[in-house]
Length: 483
Image (spheres, rainbow, N blue to C red):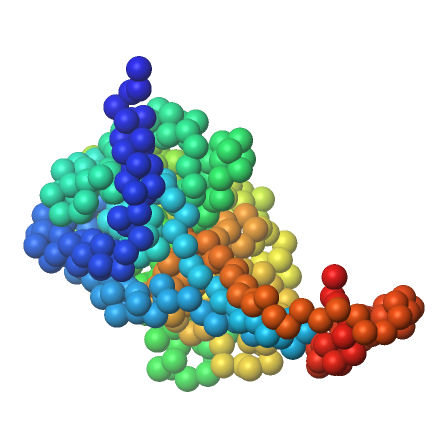
């Protein structure tokens, strides 16, 4: 007898088989319904985010609601163009013929979302999966319970419940889902769980997109230019570290690389900006999220308990266990072999590592796993080229932070240990589609050889035909069959 979970998946598979999700009208109707869900429930979304993570309405709109509205609107405006088959060039060797590439939905998709952006990381992949014509089972993170409950209760009221389902539950539910066969798995979370997802998918040869993370550095090479640019640099570092869920974000700045002689200048600028943005001390903090739960809170506190790490604190360091709040904290040159420098921090602690020369930052970054993002504040074009050519990361952003995530025309995704696969905008559509190659040929002309089968002579012409496409015409004129 099938369980309720298996029945739900069977219904998704039957819905996809019937072909209703493949029509453009269905895709558009679901995307419009999703936009309506967001517009009509904005206050409820704000409330759930405050309850789970202490996010302010401004942060919630910037990182969740606004991102989703923009993503849905952009997808709706481009969908017909994306769905249309694309003409492909055909070598003259195959004349007369025509070819095209047609995107097709993959089938039944499983999406695992994360707790730090519980709406964006659940619904943005869903937008891509729907736009590509798939049926979807969404598994939100149970670490953001209010947001999970909202999604479970609200999505069925707006979207086609035979094609889009939301399943609540913890790790045990996730494990059961991974035992089943899917046509695509999209996972956002930690590398540890990502490995489990990939291992389970391999049993069914299921394609996987893994959005993971890593230690994303910020290289600072602008403090010696002008005071105004130095202030902007500090402002954007603070926003890129503590702005997104108090550093609990895969794209948050993990640590900063700066020359020794400029470290004190940077620290003073960061202190002033933190006080202006978030308050003077832990008791007066404002506009900043809290740590998601006690486990994550204790993990971060433990990073600071290392005596050598504690000695490197130059700002902050205070904690409020009752409220699960950690003050924005700056550390100067903590030990490179400490856990805070070997593991992704995922919290409001910012190590600053000093170098004799800023160009040493390239070797420093390359000594670690591939970061999801490299942020580089520099106006040196030669240095920019070196960063681009000599490092490997999912993204490089010059002279700002976080903005790449909001750009629908850029793919978002990692490389190596920071994940693989990509999404956002057209790249989301592509991630959940299979590009089918199609070749059209007629039955004529079909010319039999008119000359004796001079094998060596024919072989020579075949070689030339493949090397220089226009020789295909010569083959036809000479009457050689390609077969």
